[in-house]
Length: 178
Image 1 (spheres, rainbow, N blue to C red):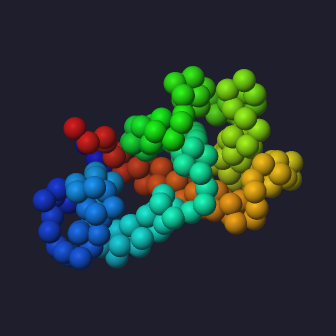
Image 2 (cartoon, rainbow, N blue to C red):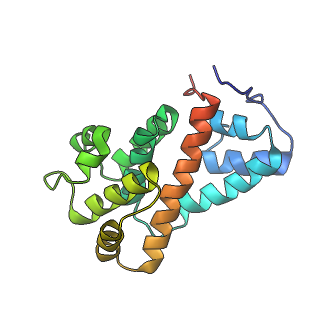
C-alpha cells in the first residue's frame, strides 16, 4: 500500500489533463499518475516533461532504458524497474544484460555484454545517481561514446529525470499495479 493516498483510477477531472495522461499511457492511469494527481499542476508538468524525456529526445531507446533501469536498481525503485524492463527488452536488451544490471558498477565494466557506448552510459548513470558529481574521466568517456553534445545533454537529463521519478516512488512506497 502506498504511503500517500492515490486518487481514484476512475478520476475524470480535470478532464483535459486526465485525457492527456491517459493518451500518453495508452488508456489507463498508472499508480504513479494516481499519486501525482493529488497535485494536478504537478501531474501536468510531469506528464509534459516525462513525455518529452521518454518520446522526443535523440537518445536511442536502448541507451535510455539502460540508464532508467540502472537508476531503478541503484535507488531500489522496484515500481520503476518493473515498468521499464519490458521497454528495455523491446529496445534490444537481453536477459543476460538485464541480469547484469543488478550490479550496475560491475555492468559498467562488462565488455562481454555491453559495448563501449553502453558502458559509458552505465558509468555515467552510476556516478550521477550514487555520488551526483561525475568524474572527468567518466564525462569524457560519455562525450567520446556519444555522437554530440545534444545527446550528452539529453542522456544527462534522462538520468536526472529518472532519479526524480525513483525518489517519488521510493518515498511514496508506490506499489506495482495489480
